Image (cartoon, rainbow, N blue to C red; front, side, top):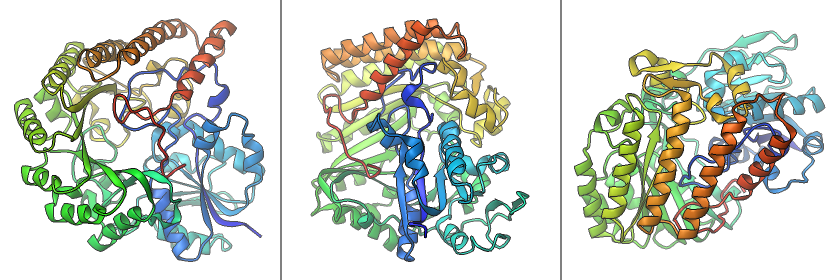
Length: 539
């Protein structure tokens, strides 16, 4: 008798990362969310599936295998997987960074449980469904976004062996013949996450107000364009009903611990009336920080409203480039640098405790190495101007991949890009190359893969030094980070001369030691001096 109806597993990006001595998990930048090169944070879609099935009386659990492997070096993964017991296994393949790890975990599961079906889902699974379903360890691929009800239907029909009536499903019959069912667009989406199914000591949550996106960042597979074209989201974005969204928000207040942080993705807060209702819900809770991922600059009346509440707003602004021309090619809104600074002036005048993170990216349309260093100079200007406030800047290359299904990926010539990989197997192999430059699936007319690597480290090094100059990082942290960048550059230079099979033993030892150090240092980057470990929902 199966213990579970469904076990959902989140794989590491590279399955055997713990002993990998021929692939460097190279330091390249810090981000605002603490995630290692193993990408151990699983997509919220898993919790939506969990919520739906448990309300239906189903037995379902989420196993974050990546997180378990990261925290327990002695975990015998194969034995652990062998002892699992379920009617069906589900593996998320949302981010393309999991192309190798997710398929490797599926293969092990199939080896030990040949009669238990395995289903994949997520953005990458949907985009590559025609290739993914051909893998022997894959029995089902569920395309699109409105998956919980379809997975529930599939579970109830598993004994039948025929699934022609389940939309969005790619499947194999008992003779391993492949069928691809019709695709059904999602015109509504009310699959909420009920945090009642999580522990009481979580202090890091993430919420979505719907599915898809209102906007069109040209490099993103979660854009309005991509979600409409590949994920079946009607009009590219569908809001949850307000009452359902607010119930989800309320469930967080019942499960949060002290000093809880909530990351609110997408842009529901552009509706000031909904923003006020959410802030009212948070008023009597332990929630102290709320992240707002901005696309455009939030109107001033929204900023004034926030001053009436005890929460500390954390605004994440991905401006991509200091060049307004390049920002436009990235799909960013058409505000100028002067308008950005005027907005920041007003924000800090209203709330001097607000936190701001400004993000720049490398590998963009029309972006040269000179443009990147201008970005670093502009970032320095922002740090100097807002030195007494909690404003920080970040720069990183677009890695590991340009998203398949994004606007640029579908129109590379228009944007000056060259796409270097053809199919899923290329991505699976790319994650195992020794030097991360060879994992890029693109280069641009202005920057080759080698040049992206070189300018990324030059920019990161200068950015870190500037952070020390303006008090955004402690001096010791600056020194250690610069040393890490310099050591990484030297190690990559030697690694680039070898492929996996001919790597010298001495170099393998260095790679393993380096990787262990990187994986051990997975700390929160929420502020320059706050080095606490946070407990996320996935822990």
